[in-house]
Image (cartoon, rainbow, N blue to C red; front, top):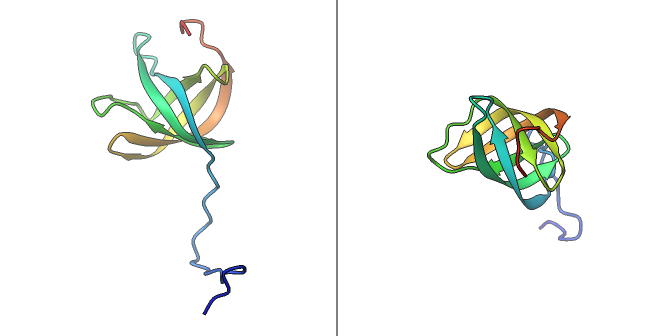
Length: 103
């Protein structure tokens, strides 16, 4: 039986996923198509990416700008995975607040 204080670590051969602190932040996906925006919610966020909750009917391109008013910056994003109303993105850089955004 494993000691609960020091559980036995199983090496599955797969890389460990980065710990993603849970957050609840509003954001805007700026697609660049005629200044269109899609509202979203950041469910977790870390230095290199985030998980976004988006409306099911939304079409989100593979690359876009994610403006997070609480952070005051925009993240250049690349989609890594999609599941129903969730999208996992990798941050590829940052930009200042977009001029066209009203928030």
